[in-house]
Image (cartoon, rainbow, N blue to C red; front, side, top):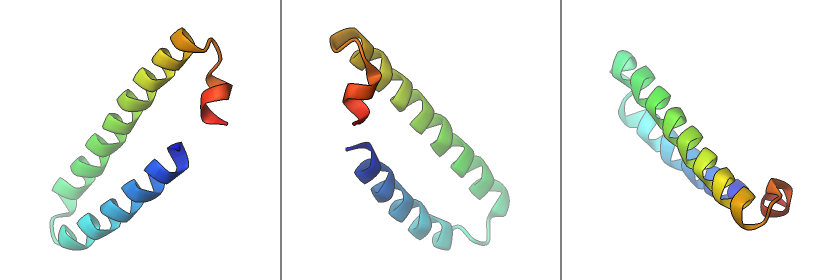
Length: 61
């Protein structure tokens, strides 16, 4: 599930990178924000999983 999510994200980012090639400063900021968002999302998923299943591994595998 998570790998599919990240593959889709990578595809989206590649197309956005092409669009934003000329704006390297805003692009860097954009990618940084994207990474922060992924981080926050993953942490909340992790917390929910630990709460419901008690083990993060069972969710990822």
